[in-house]
Length: 238
Image 1 (cartoon, rainbow, N blue to C red):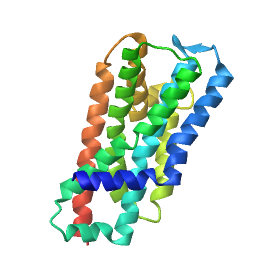
Image 2 (image 1 turned 30 degrees about the horizontal axis):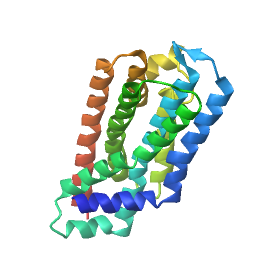
Image 3 (image 1 turned 135 degrees about the vertical axis):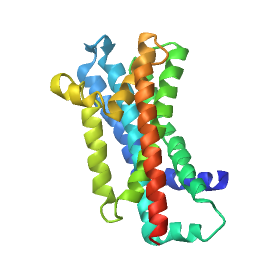
Image 4 (image 1 turned 90 degrees about the vertical axis):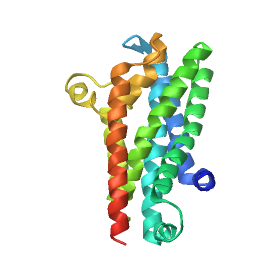
């Protein structure tokens, strides 16, 4: 399995589209927000910190859901069918996709957090570490969602479906701007909102947000179960 994960990670890191949408684009958006709002605050947190976290989580979301397009292409090319003819267990293939997605989210987190430090966001090392771990660990929820989406959508439609899903979750989750009022009433139950809130907890000196952890764990269980079921369904059709 380690070899499969290694090959998957290397293939993703060589993809220019991945580098743009998961590293360059979030970094550009953070820089735009940081220079636009400067010393303004929201809910006791500076906008620089808010958008540093939200753009790091957006980059992670993008990298994770990008798994759907890779899986869909592998299905179309017949690669997954060839793998099923080998001794490789199906669960190894699925788990390797999730783990690889978790690994390739790290560049986005490191780049955006690095820009945050350059732009004047200062925290103790423990806070940086807490935020980084929260962003990285939360990304596995969306890695599982990416695997499920890769088997649910047809190869010709997976890209627009993935983009719409990603932008909708980011919008309701407060990635582009803080959600309030009616949007918050709906958005607070979405996985990206829970993800952003969890990632910001170390800023206020709280190590773990229990409600966010429980909510994301529930989403992870649902997405993982759905991915497993869709993988089994896809295997029966070939």
